[in-house]
Length: 374
Ligand SMILES: [Fe+2]
Image (cartoon, rainbow, N blue to C red; front, side, top):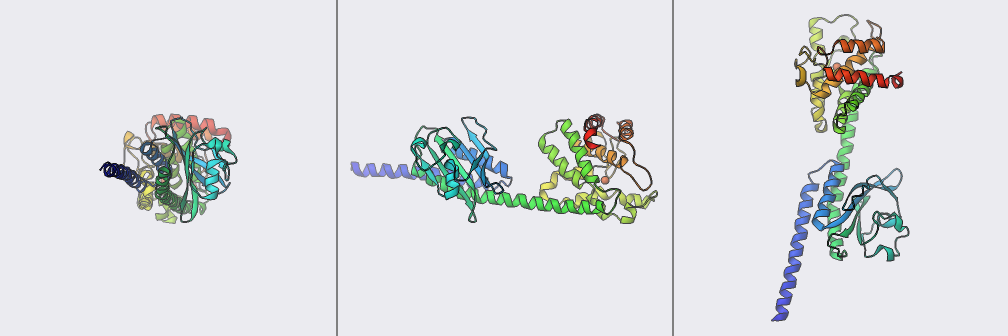
């Protein structure tokens, strides 16, 4: 009877453990399959692993194919060490060994383990580790390294098995996130190529988007806008005039004044530009910037006649940068204005064409940059 009860309680405890493991896998699966941004995916994943399994330190290293090194791309630990960016050579330390051999390991005591030739390269000082390779479609992506359980216990074979199952889920997610990023970059380059091809056909606008991007980013950085906003602006500025593809070339290059109909057609380019990038989901937040780069602070701009703060801050910045580059570039019908003359004109149009606080920062950013701009 006692033996039967003992057996029952062991079975119950092992079943409970299995249910717990399955719930961890389920939670991780839900998260990793829904995140396509690589950095965010890694951060969310290691936080889940750390909290669910009860780990003091956890980090993910990915292979840098150019240098054949492992780079820490996400780290999370009670030690509070920020290890992101640290590099390890293949074959060195626990992570290097696991990457080179593609074999998961459980290390009870690093100091006594003879498998690892350079123990100093291990990411943490001491204790027990489990480390597993991340492999997708037969390709090594990197390794995940878990160090010390919060409970103080050593890692078990069961922990290692759970980690191996979890790595197969996250490896597929990392691979997807990388492919998605590649797809985004390719799509962006395609649209950018359209815009630059259009510019290159006309010596007067050659390099315009690159300069507008440079001026816009300098201004946004001076205004201390968050890095993600600056990135959005960088994308938008490179593509801001892509809609000119949809405007008749004879109108684009006409050296004399445009007729009313021609001017109406010209004013469609921000709308066409927005339409061109609409299928690209990752550029969704740049759409209003492109659409509104010709709006004016006093509401007399186009295509929507937006006024003041109804125009997004990023579109306000790009409007000034765009106008400055137009003034300082040669045109078939007039010479380029000097840097100082253009800045004077920008200041003169403050509060009518341009947002007052933006022009102030733009002028300061351009003065700062002038030696570099030449
Ligand atoms: Fe434009």
